[in-house]
Amino acid sequence: MSRTRVLMTNANSDAGLSAARSLVRAGYDVSSADVVDMPYGVKSRFISAHHILANGTADAYAASLLDVVDRIRPDVLLPLGAQSTLGSAVLRERLDAMTALNVPDQNAIAVADDKFASMASLEALGIACAQIHSYADAVTALSGNPALTLVVKPRANVGAARGVRYVNTRGELDDAIAACRASYGDAVIQEFVPGGPETMNTAVLLYSRESRLVAPFTTMKKRQWPTTGGLTVVSRSTRDEAIVELVNPFFEHWKWRGPAEVEVKRDSRTGEQKVIEINPRFPAYFRFADRCGLDLATIAVRLALKEDIAPLDYPSYRVGVTYMNPRLLMKSAGWHVRRTGVAEVPRIVTELGAGFQCAVDMLRDPLPLLGRTLKGR
Image (cartoon, rainbow, N blue to C red):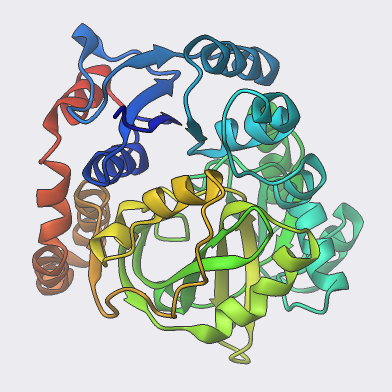
């Protein structure tokens, strides 16, 4: 009996490597598609075949993804990452005729992928979120309050805190908007919600084809890079029903299908939880859920195949587990040591030890890591 064939994207990312291992462990045959062509053809030992996608415009990428699916006809397409999720949503009707997949429709993902539109929708639904400012209002606010900080970020979802800048003056505001437009397109100006990394919470949510929340996973950040906000360096798995209940109405309203990640920050001034960003995809720290015992990759494939999976009891994973990204921890450690000396070292050592198993897990599939190093990624 032949195994169910899964084609997944972003196979050379940390999320992709974790998903491939989980799916093979669950009995699937996994092939991959990515814009990255690794040196010497190295690939994950869990991948049976690798296909290169066009790395140009969004249209070129989507066309190449459609071509690969049409040629190999996988049983399931599992898009990981913003570009493939957005492209799959745009092509959903055409892809549905070739393979099984579970992604939002174009209207839903267009809102979630647009920071201005998503914050407006959250506000309309009565969900607390970081306020979006017009340029005129931002200029007025900055001129009237020298201590005020605002955030300028790309309007579209690009991930990894790319293009995010914090501004305190009109000159910094203008420079940040110009830089964002030059690299990432339109910018949005957002309220800065004060608070350290420990006030940052995330919810990873996986919805069925019938828009039913099947598997939530929540975390609390302990360290991030850059230090002002961005990628998760160290975090802890949590049981936080409050943020799941806070954001679920947004996804119910848009009849969401598939995965999403939401970043929520507790305002240190008031204690109020505010949504600061919605990402219509699985996050980069995807492997953390699997480390805690929640196999999101396999659940996602089963949902795409229209299997009837009842919503999991929450939490359906171990709480209090530590996640650590070793490469980013070294960057964060170097930054702190240069500024504060050795005071941060004991905490760094503790975090390194608590999250050491995460690094061990990554080394179980070493060739893609070697390939990424050779390509300087």
